[in-house]
Length: 468
Image (cartoon, rainbow, N blue to C red; front, side):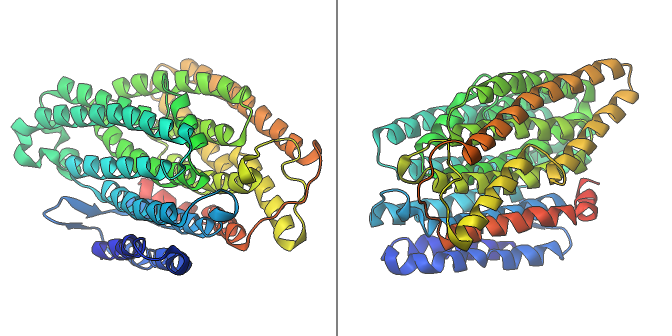
């Protein structure tokens, strides 16, 4: 069943070499075919493929379903890209070509049982993203594509070095199976070089943090997403981050079995420092793309904190909500900043007709949901996540320290909350009103992501089973 996931993407890759005016009409339909094997995988037992190097378990079934929905929404939004930016047919085809390769790399990373295949899939997704950024032919985009290549190379090299150290720590006990996540999890007590494993995990974590825009490299991700076309930003937040987070979930679960206190200390310090810097960067931001990009880092921090604290349900719910809401906001940005005009004041004014009014309502709901106002899934994920943090502290002698940490997080989140409310008020009530247009494919993408977000509210039991 796993191999069927690659068929629609291979077809998209082949069609990208033909006349874009004819082939692009079928791309949303072709991409939607990914949902067929994805849904079928949900109802099949866990299994392994290709000598146990690839696997399907509850976690990656859920991640693949989320990514398939986001991928379909992005292909819908791509239909109207030419109405907002100047892009030649040749560059259009090139974007689709590397979009398909990007998606294939993401699937490999998410389904990898081997640390090596996880790294290869992540590298494929990274390199293909560079070419999608360069689809925008401006000097700024080309410069940022090279910056991404450099930063991405640093991050992926740190992850590779960490994998090598983890493999070296487990190989004397597990032999060649030391590359497999399942073998490491089953026989973690047999690893005698725990210190070497923890050093390897630290390298993997820092490399992943860099790719997620954590401290001290907070601005590079926002610059990349500002320079690229808005579908690239949607792919970053919905698919690439999903692959990175899934891998980090698996690595941190292993590190937790070895030494939970070390994992908690390392993660909390790094995450809180990142959140502190990001909160004040968001407070000073002046355009949509950077606002939404930096907000994504905030949510990655919360996911990671919830996961290492034992709040697996909260982390997975927050992950899925972010994967739907943030691409929706980036797709909305493509409409709000049509033709490169990205003035916040009055951005939600001037949309007429049914599509225009629906667009205004959806953008408002997305912005309120991303700051965790009820009944957003993020409201519930944060509620359960902070409860998990308190439960963790109850079993130790650090309850007051944990309460102080939660209070610090809430203060920083309040800064971000204020900024989003201020931006929304500026969009809705300030500035002059000019006639604007939104296209059916974009509204369709936003409706799909809105329905997926609503579906999360009825999926608590399903998500809880994944977290165990």
